Length: 298
View 1 (cartoon, one colour):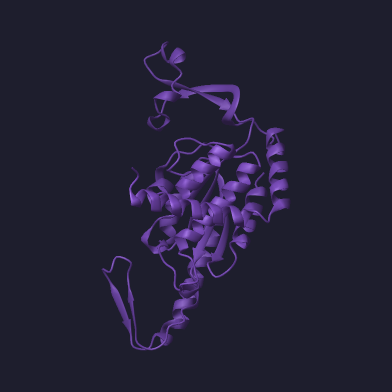
View 2 (cartoon, helix red, strand yellow):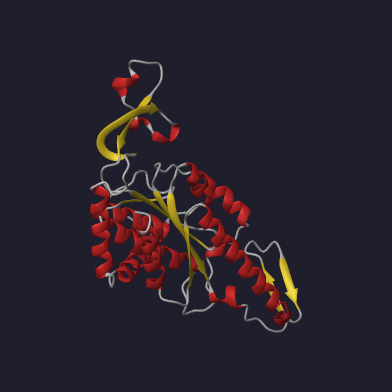
């Protein structure tokens, strides 16, 4: 018998999946464009041969720990003391890796009629997964999926992981991806810019393109507080008490704007796109911007 906790978790995943699908549903033209882009990729619009998921043999390389035993080419490995993996040419659809931040700061919504940042991020990522999957792309949840998949099965599995997965930052820092792949990271990106620079540097080394979806609550940007206000850190280790919170508004907004500008500069320095989305605005706006950002890379 399934536990009530398991049922609740599955129900929440289904609800977020349905919300994500609803966001992507109005994009009839976008879905058609996604299919055209996927067809262009198959026909070789990238203009270069790449290692990837196709069937044409490219070369052998040494086996890495993250490849797993199933990837070993035992016939080639039998000729040596080393283990080898076959790498194939990327003839079919690209792989897009999606990640939804599960950090404590994402578990926040300032009003009852606003979603948690974590849930809005999941909805946007699931909507993107639906569009990409329908366009023939292979998709995977970064750090959550064992392999990239296409079609309805891929969408089903990725949606579940985006809705209920841990969303660990270690996935951004170390989870394996294919060279030349594309990545979409959804977070509030509140960590220092240099921290994110270090996390994103490995994608540049892999020549991976992508986009950052910055999810913010309107309260975080507007700083509407007045009078005596206590602010607590998410771990409750630190607190700040303002006698007149409105006096800090100008300096707070300046620092907030500076952080956003530096994050945009960081994305551009790697050839990525930053999309900033407030949870009091339609999710369709964020999904449209993300899809266009990825389409420009093809």
